[in-house]
Amino acid sequence: MNWGPISEWAAAVAELLAVSVALFLPYYTEHRKEKRKIRNLRVAINHLSQQALAGEKDAVVTLEIFLNVSFLTTSSAEAERLIVAGRLILDSIKALPDKQAENYSTAVQQINKLVAAINTPKHRSKANR
Image (cartoon, rainbow, N blue to C red):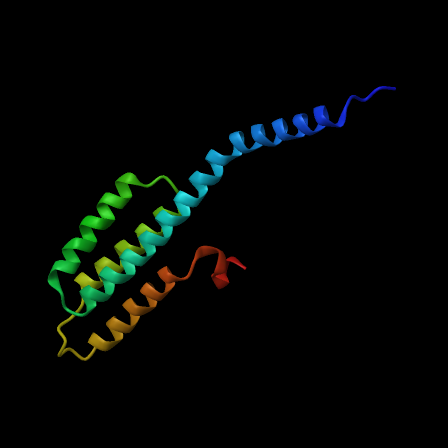
């Protein structure tokens, strides 16, 4: 039985690997791009929420615009989950009582818990274990 020279086998294996890379590289690139978008969304919501809690009025408007634009451009369930959580944070910030009110610190603590929940990736949260 003649199986052919080893050089033809090496060429066939190399060709198979090249085709495999050509087929799966776009999927891998898209996956990495989506992970980067999720990370950036999480960081932006966190940063803008902290600025809004610090009293910067422009941060509230910026956060609202950012969430609206992100909602219109997103295609993943994870990003939508983050945007919904961001909207909840935004609504909570808008509903904050005056700093002199006795329930102000409790409301801020609740918002900080929501922000901390956003910073926990979905696959690491206790609810998904």
